[in-house]
Image (cartoon, rainbow, N blue to C red; front, side):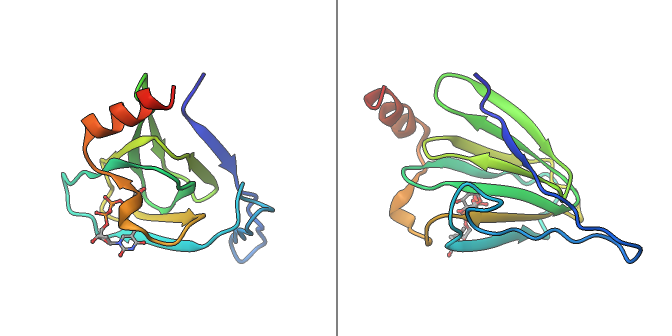
Length: 135
Ligand code: T46
């Protein structure tokens, strides 16, 4: 089973260029409670290094590219996000790391929950313990 689940976003294009519209439940597998975006990431920087207890997200590089590592505690997979028409689904209890940000990368993330620091598992050993407890 692959950890990489993507959603194609239909570009609504005409002679002026392109537009993508994202609607909770209709184009994403959840209602959107929060949107954040990461930009201006310095060269060589990696981010993430955590999992969430109860959070579903879809990540899309609206400009530029970055690389994701997803890890469910059993296997790891990499994915390059480099298109404004591809969303990467990140479920709960998935360890994520992001790196190789292009200088122009704008990584937008749509989330089904409000920000809650207590939902983060920031220690990899704690993450593995949690995964094992749930399997
Ligand atoms: C994730 C990956 C893909 C807030 O105050 N509100 C927010 O909604 C978010 C996302 C962050 N913050 C604060 C918390 C930290 O002080 O912004 C700061 C940077 O957050 P963090 O170090 O968690 O950023 P990343 O890039 O490591 O992780 C983020 C998300 O936090 C995380 O949920 O899945 O992007």
